[in-house]
Image (tube, rainbow, N blue to C red; front, side):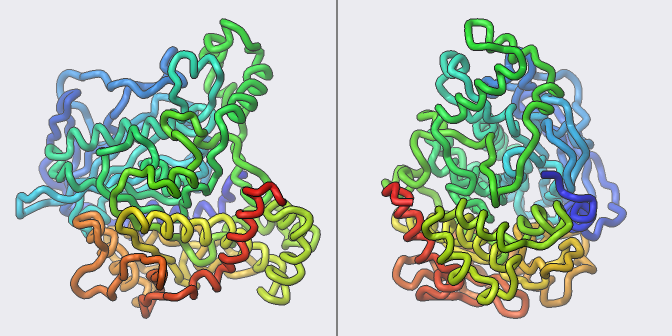
Length: 534
């Protein structure tokens, strides 16, 4: 499903270009990388080095292979423009991209008068593993406000990042090329951190949606050990898009290969690598409808990058033990209901829609209980709001809370919920207000060059507080700092969750979050699923 032009104008205006102004020019900075020198651009207190390659282009024989080292260059590279976006369909952020030469990152380095190494924050974008790019997020305001080096990263998406065939695993057992790309970017950042003005011992990985899910996977991946020192997951629970068995990806990849005229056998991989980028894109249209369907191209349990299912790795404590911050938005599901029905089909949710969605979530036996009682229109005010609440609670809120509860037994953990019921950026919607919808917090973290006119005074205060929390966590593994409401470390007894709301940042405790999102109900559903009782 593609984001509509209305949604595109709304979110793009907030996340990509909030408060853009004319920048004062300064002397062009030079960065010395292992591959050569790069000339960036300095303005408004931040040096930008854009479009730096962290891996070789994954084209030709390198398609569906682990990322390779980038080639060196002679002279001084122009690093004042963004590089290519990985292959994807049009979205709110950009047009269609048809080039696989896309493994680039962008560095934002603030002026540092102290000369002391700064924390480094590496951003992994969302987009369901089929959309997005690092260049869609301007890291300059965050770098300046947080006094941290900010790096935004591209990684392979869709079929290019997550296809798997037995022949590929015969070449190399590791799959999940998109996650391997992120690891390559982290290695580049760690190796260059000192030259970027950063501290290689203070690298924080943070991301939203699929990027937040990726951040969790790096907590679980042996290949990510030692590459980062903290992780922030925004609306990206560890099981957000499922961790599927590799055999499942093999099966759907085989169907794809056959459809493109590449049958099983010794020549299958060569045939697939000869397919054009456009042919592969056309054969695998993106699907972001999490209400009714399962995204086909997601990280798989390959026993290398991801050794086992995420929940099993978490529960056994087989993690890279660094401080974590996990959370989401209060009304995640409203975006998806709006995309599927209000914007996608120009109508509201019907009782049949609601019943079908709940049967998919909880099975036919329990579905009537959920549609008529637990997530009834009488309880939530409308079918649209009821279904959105179920999507929020099942896929995001309770999953994230379960993650942080488990992680807190092994490492320092903090939980949060973004809760601005009037978050700007929503498309006009006659069926409901979007409230604190999925991705609404991005504009608060990636603020513009000046305080945004779309924020009220209370919202601007909240945005500034959130940046300070994120900056403190990057600096010392703890979000607390002077002038901020106290944020309690998560523990399983009182289960504190920092409620990030304009006007009053508070802490909910002792089951308040779980009751709000009916997490006890969903825990029972998932336990029954594991027992194959549903």
